[in-house]
Image 1 (cartoon, one colour):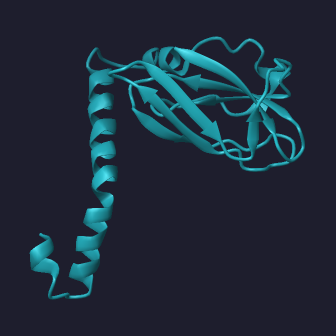
Image 2: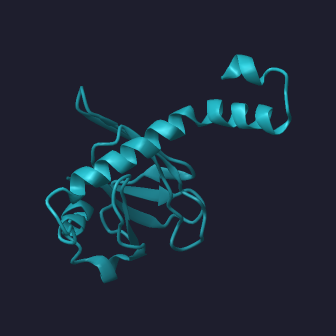
Length: 149
């Protein structure tokens, strides 16, 4: 499913339509820049899996009720997305990133393999601070390495 929201750049007032792919990851960053002035409008999305819900926020942008967007951008934590473009150029963009990705799968197991790979990356990212601490201690030949392993 794709959720559409409109945001207004706090710097230049440009309206961007964000097509947010609602997928299976619980949270992921959103990297967007204003198509007009280049200001970072990045943010974060949280998708409720056990208790359905969708929350997102953007830096340097406000929610906009105006559906006359200057630019359109897709965001997904799971799949490749269409690049940001002027709204008129992506007016016919109706297929979701999920459907586009499924069309290029080679086998029936490809999607499950993809989900497992991304899940492993997410698990590693959650533990990264601990891994980094151990690697730093090992690199520095620290006497505290043993207690951290």
